[in-house]
Length: 366
Image 1: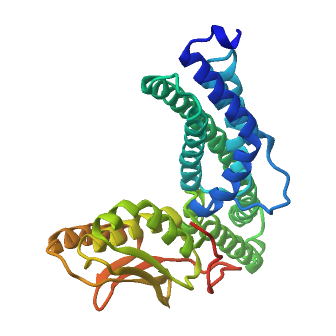
Image 2: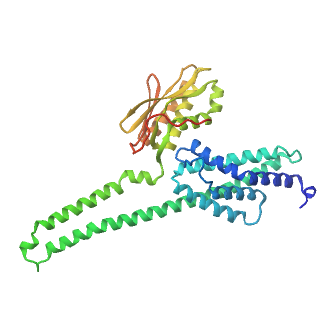
Image 3: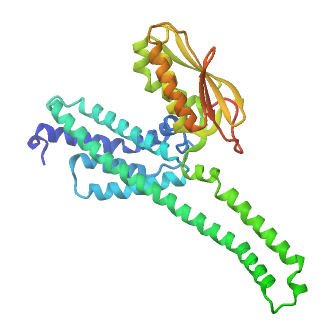
């Protein structure tokens, strides 16, 4: 169709789609880089690492979904499934994947908005229609990515359980053999009473018990829930600060990250929710034109303690207390604590893992 024959909404759609397709490689690179910063638990890639073609293909299909080109849904499902599986193989957590999807939608919407600025013939309704189509395509991409992620995870679970069954059956078979020999009346009594049989049963029963404790314990279940990863707490606080910018502006306050904050092995999503609730509650009752600072306080056994510093100064203390009470209940569910003294304290549950960095987190810009 010639440019002159297109209606205003068709011209705007063509312009947005063409712009998104042209920017797909750059958007893919930014998505990977920014994803590691705004979603703790997302994969981190070296600057010179080759870019995944699945991200570019997914972005291209998202763009084509705006105009409704043939097969865009099939292409989007295919690329989304592959991308979700790839994210799991790279070590992404499920909460991080959801935040990355939100980031992708925000980036594509901003790119579409930027492309639409140059068109002064389309109406606001036309722009909203395009945004709705983009959101529809992103919803399908989310389903495909989640399905690819979960199926890849299930493949790993099946493989682990298959190996576990094999490892348990070996000592269990030895125990059965020993018991059968001990109960076989055709064998002389002195042979059936041989201490070696009892030693075999005890040794293999101990082996089974150790496997159950190590590979079917609470720690293994937590890993399978995709919840615990090495989390730079400074990045989490910066994410909370971005999300609470409007609240801080309304309170005429600022949220500061008092470096250094450690990197710990914890539940990134739970840490973000707790910090958001606590910092939000503190902002509601902070004195105008003051800082609400988040700092590292100390390490405890199985926890890291952060402090939120503020200057009380308004009449909304009841709102703050209600918010902190809710945060304290959530913290207990997570195995942590929230309490007040000279500061408002947050104890986040952690696990000591090999390679955990207890020093400062990596620096990253807002």
